[in-house]
Image 1: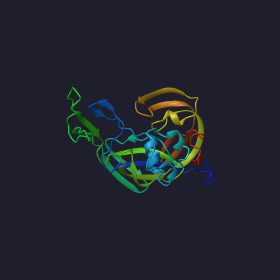
Image 2: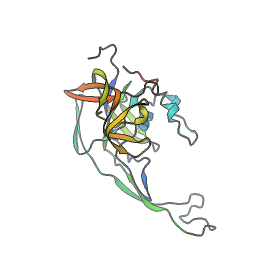
Image 3: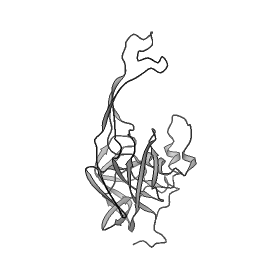
Image 4: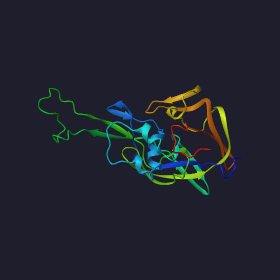
Length: 246
């Protein structure tokens, strides 16, 4: 095991929604979402102590490449905890039952004219009617964090849905390098430039996520919690220059 003085703060985290949650999705009129949360939105939420990455207004161009260098807590993407799951976080044992996405119908209103009708000079009346799907409250997701304690109440996503994060610090057994099957989804933009993918499912969102993958050669941690072992990929130190890594 890595000595206590050099051991990084690595935690297994459970994010539990307290609100309807939705994010960039795919589809036309009837939109749907996958059930994975990208780690950029998680890191904005848990680095709430950092005023440099939270601004009242900015341009319409994302500033991910700038902001990730300011994050002091790194998070992996999150995967859904489906079914009836026991979450053994320290002495807390909580059970959650996954609920499927809820469809909410809409009929868009043209805010300038305060009417569902298009302006008079448009020839075709095509009201924007459809259905958007949202993940309901009390669904839970799991991710891993490095560099600090993310536990507490957060607002996540561009719609600032409320959620609570529970965390439990893991024991770091060793740091390794090579091919690995991580116990979390992977954001390939987090990794150094040269790596290979032996096996992976791809979640099409921005950034895309690799799930159930075998990838390498990469640096990764082997951690333990109550007899269970987790493999957690370490991201690029250059990209996440403000995070304390082993």
